Amino acid sequence: MPARPLVLYPDPRLKTPCAVIEAIDDSVRAWAEDLLASMDAAPPRTVGIAAPQVGILSRLAIVDTSRNPQHPGGHGLLILVNPQIVAAEGEQIFREGCLSLPDYTANIRRSQKVTVTALGLGGDLLTIDAEGFEAVVLQHEIDHLDGLLFLDRVANVKTDLFRRKTG
Image (tube, rainbow, N blue to C red; front, side, top):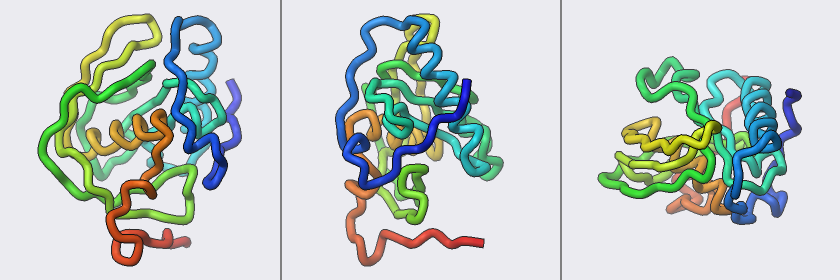
């Protein structure tokens, strides 16, 4: 499947809560392939993408923290249908970036550990216990599905938001 063009801030689709996927059918599997192709076409070390970032307003996301060699570990490629955070604990601050806001990064406060439930593309129930970097990425992508951007979580724009360095 082809990579889809990225939806960039301030497009209102990025602030729209996504619909629950009622059935995992061929269209949902095709969306997942499009998301993966879009992630593959993105800058190196891209570790997550959510459906609204390519204009699909449904609860589908992909996370693969193994693409970033600075953060070993994690569960590898996760294709998540209707993911939700069911438990969270601890606190950490992490520098985050986003394909839909390519010019900025920010220090964001997130939970240190999360438990996420979702369906896989085969309809199987997944339970993912994640911590550290992978927990951050899961929270970031699920935020997209809820119509939230990392900008919505910036505590202080003057001290926590940064223009991305180029070159």
